[in-house]
Length: 213
Length: 218
Image 1: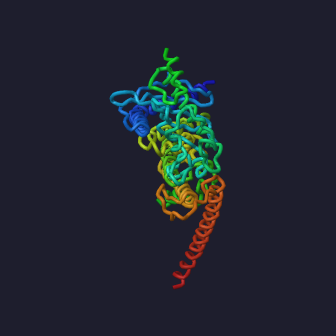
Image 2: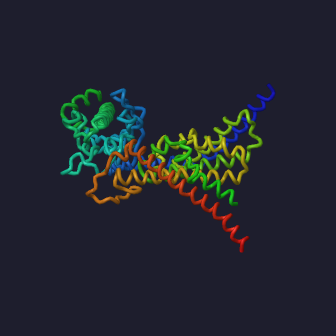
Image 3: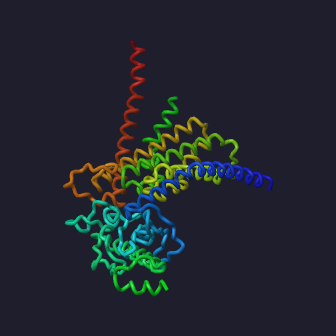
């Protein structure tokens, strides 16, 4: 009995020391980690919206239109003068685990761009979605995420119809397309609810007014 | 000193954790699709191994036998978390591409095996050499596997295009089977080196008494 108490005590001392040292390292690295994350976010927002000056976190206000796609973060991106659009970081299941994309939607409901932030699919097949030199449209040098730029959120987003798939990676192509579709639809829904921007595709403009009231 | 060198050398070739002891293989095949990952993983692993061995060897007399495994795990986990945090803070790209394999160093059998078999019974200095030998033994194997896989499977070395543009990457090498193939070939090569070294040693051992005899005769 006595020896087991002693064992426990020694174990507790080791655990407490380890905890204390980890707390110190955590405190030291925390600002650097946060700075890295902030910088990565700011630069990717800047890529989607070159005029971006600031952003506002609206994560809690945006809800996913599809339960299989999770919205990690959502930002209202603004220039010095006015809001530019919404950027959404969304995660969904892909071939080899979760994939995370950053999707930017302008006030006119068009997609400014899609960035692949995190993808663990097979390199050389599905992994080509994040390869900047893999083109689904070789003549015009359009990458898989690049083809979404300029699409409207009311488009079909169907692989092999209006989305060109990656060769031999249908699962990845479909999964990523679904994430883009859900993220942009969610962004659109939020813009409607805030009555921000005139929806360019005529079908949605009426709805936006209705919802605004 | 000679003894320490022997301990160090054991980890590199004769008792190489991957090629001879065959432990910790899962992480080594998973991260070796490019050279910078292989190098980063190897160094992270060496760091954790080194500090875990130093600490456990230094405290080996206070660590009660009955609770040694949980204490080892606490120490290993603490150093792994430190590596993870430092990499996230200062090498974000590397940390991202290695994903879950850095936290998984905690359960890497190489560390647990060396700590249990070596440093919990040895003094600090030999433990340092054992950790460096094992860690670098792990690292060089990772670098070689990843260099071959990246070069043949992607046409690049550490992200830089080396193969001519006309070269079509052989996907097979990036995929897991390619990893296994190269791993097997390396194992065979290491066995070859090992037996060659042993033969040389045996020959030298034979020559020594011969020379002594010759001297005595003269």
